[in-house]
Image (cartoon, rainbow, N blue to C red; front, side):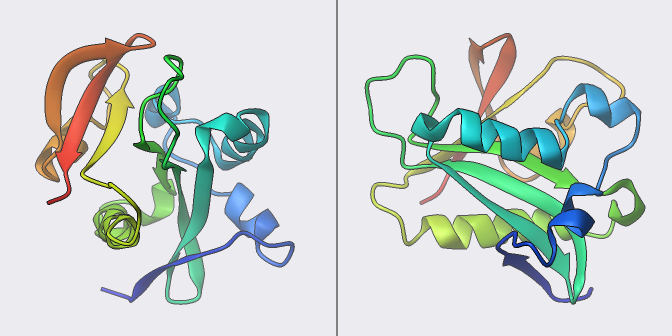
Length: 156
């Protein structure tokens, strides 16, 4: 597999990264990059940290986490929350999502009190990322947040 790395989104790569998209069925489960960047601006209290996922020199996806949310806001899950993970439909099935998540976990190993990574998944069948996350070790917590199932990945 081509070397996967995470890169900041800049003026030079913004158009290529925002053009990335999932399959039509997956659009019910993950927001696009443009919407994600708008959410990052709209919700600074969620401590957004985001990067483009690159395979070599080609942008193939996008990842965004909440990075060490301070306690006390019941409208947010954290302190570490996988907010968005998107791999463009043309590049799915090549291990880029798994590789990007490993890089996020490596980043989290440098962060204070990062014992777990949470995410949430909308219920559904066709296009749901639930199986993907469970295959990577995320566990269903039995809880729901904003109508979505909460999953937990222990980091230690």
